[in-house]
Image (tube, rainbow, N blue to C red; front, side, top):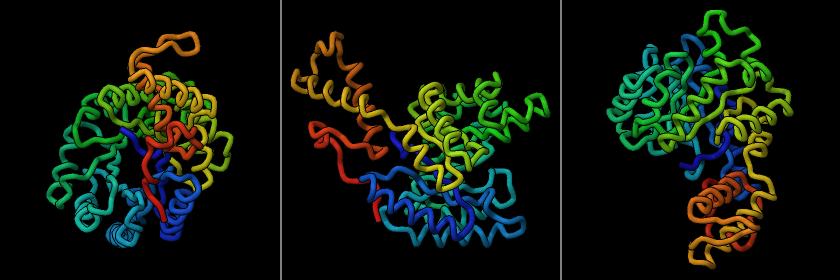
Length: 316
């Protein structure tokens, strides 16, 4: 399953609108849609103003370009505003939304609650993205990932650390701690493994050092290269490019993949000897995925493989 490698969250009106404009501009620049825009109700809505904020999200989603990739994060299923979020946003915008993110999912029962609400709002086609934020939720990751409506699972770092009642130090929420503390690393690996076991997309958590672009790139690189994450959250527009760059294959990897796929095509996909190694359809799949990821991240593709890729996924 392929999604843009970056999921950008915004809950303030001016930033939500600017995010959609930036998406269109970067799509033109890269030739592919490299990030989703998720309009945020959970952290974006002021207390007491949840209904008004949901109507704002609905208006922005409906006004987005037809080819835009726009999603919404609603309140958790046990929150008083969940039902109205679904009625207002999903009921009116389901044909415009690429997916809906539901936070604080603990179990398959929560997934079923969300799916039932989607279906009743006329959105029986709409994919569900879920955010796992507690030890119990991580324990249920494989079962949640197996649900057919779940498309992606994200890890909620700060709530996960807080859920341990002080057993994980605050450093576990920072750049270094989240990649070294055993319980945090175990949770990240469980989610990534569950997603890959069921063909879903693992989405890495935010980096709290949001103004440190080197920290963003380092976190994205480690999440991608070491933990198997193929998507990552952004909470500031400046984070998008470092995430896309880090999750993109290198020029060497792209060239290698293109040469091997061309050699395989000329051999009618029979096994070939390539650079002193034997390759067959198993490795062809791997190198084809390298090319897909290159396309998703707007990397230049060699002429020999450009024919395989369609028009950009979203544009101005």
